[in-house]
Image (cartoon, rainbow, N blue to C red; front, side, top):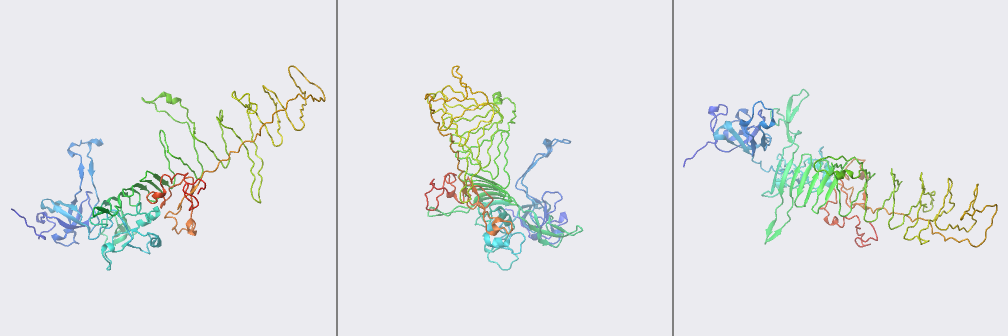
Length: 629
C-alpha cells in the first residue's frame, strides 16, 4: 500500500509560487486579516505548523470561505445586453461573515496548493462557548458597580440571574470555568426595560452550549456591531476593520475589538430527563425555539410552557398565545385594524369592551361595491350606514352624564309585552348637608300633533285597563292653542273641590243640538255620573346598577416601574396603582402577573368569567352572588 509522508514544518517560503510548501493535511491556523477586495469572504491566516513569524504579513496565507450551501443559476445561459432580470444570474445559499482576528480556524488546501486554501471550520477556544448560542443568564454574575450600561444596585438587589459574557481569562484567581463569576452583559438593561428580567420563560434563557454535556442546544448567534469602547488595540493596523478610532484629523489611531452582541436563533431540545427503574425522573424544561434580535425583539415558541410569545424590544407591545387557548395582547399605544371587507368578532361567552375615555362607533355608509363575475346585485339593495343592536335578554344603557338620541326621520319605540315608563326624577342628598336638587321636567314637543292612544281591540270593554291618566302634584296647565278632548264614550269630570269652566268667549255645551246659554246656572239634578278615579300616573324608576368591576391584582407591579429612581414615578413614594375594570384579565406592560403559565389555576375558564366572584376569605363560598368582590 502506498503511503505519503509530510513534514510538519517544511523549509519553503510563502512568497515564490514555485517554492511554496505543499500540504495535504488539515491545519489549525489563526485569522490575521479579514479584508477582501473581492468581497467573497476571503481571509488571511497564519499557520504555525508552517513556521515563520506570526507578526510578518508575508507568512499569512489567503484562504477562501467554504460555505455549507451555495448556488447560482447558470452563467452560460445569460444574454448579453439584456436588462431583463430573468436573463441574469441569481445566487442563493448561506452566508456568514468572517470571525474576529485571532480566532482559530481549520484550513485545507486543494491538491496541496497553498494558493488554493479553504477554511472548513472553527475549533472552539477552551471554555469560551458559554454565550453560544442564546446568550444565557446565570446567577454567577460579576456586577460592575461603576458601569454606565446598567443599574448595578438594582441588579444586586432585585435580579437574581442576568446575561453574562465569557469569564475573564486575564483574572489570575478563578475556580473551574463553569463556577467562575462572569461580567454582566448590558443586555440585562433591555430585559429590565421590557419587564422580563426575572421572567425565565420570556426574558432570561438557559440555552447555552455549557448547560449540560452533551449539549441539547442548537443555534446560531451573530457577532453584533463593534463596541467602540472595549478591547482597544493601540496598533491602528491591527484589529477590527469596523472598529477604527480616529483623531480629530480623521487619522486612525486605534482599533476597538469588542462586540455588543448580536442576533440569536436557538432551537433548544431542553434539559434531558433520566430513566430510573423504568420511571422518568426530572422535568423536561427549556424546550423551545427562540428568534431574538440584538436589541430584544423576539419570537418564542415554548414547548415546555405551551405558549408562543412575540414582544418588542422596548416592551411597549407584546402578544401571547397560551396553552389553554388564550390570546393576550398589550400595546403601549394604539391597536389599529382595517379590513377591506368585514371585521367579524364573536365570543361564545361575553364581549367586554371598556374605554378609559370614550367609546366611539359610527356606521359611515361609504361601502363601495367592486363589480365582478361573482357579484350579486341584490346585495346593493341592502341599507348602509345602519347600526343594529339586538339582545336575546335585557338591554341596559346607563349614562352618568347627558343622554341624547337624534334621528333625521321617524323615531319609534315599542314595548311588546310590558310598560313604557318615562321619568324625570328628583334626587335628595343624604347626610347633614343634604340638598334637594331642582325639579326635572318631562317635555314633549312636536311641530305637528301629539297623539296619545290607550287600549286595543283586546281590552276595549275594560274601562280600567285603557285609561289615559294625567296627574300633576301641583297644577296642570295648557297655555297655548286649542285643547280638544274627544271620546267615543262618556266624558266624566270629578273634583273634590270646585269645577270651574271659564271662557272669555261663549261656553257651549251641545248634545243632540241642545245649547245651554246663561249667566249663573246651578244644576243639581243628581243624574251626573261620577267618574272612576284614574290610577297614579307616576312612572316606574329605570335605575340601572353599574357594571360590576374587579380589582386586577399586581396591575402596576411590572418589574420595570417599581424600581425606577425617577422622582416622577408613582412608586417612588411607595404608592401602587390599582386598575379597576369590568374585565378579570387586562394585559399590561411586563412583568404581568397573570400570564397563564404563572398562575394557571387563577385563569381557568370559570375564573376569567367577569360574572364569577372570588371567595372573600371565609365570608362566602366561591361564586356566591350575595357578596361581590
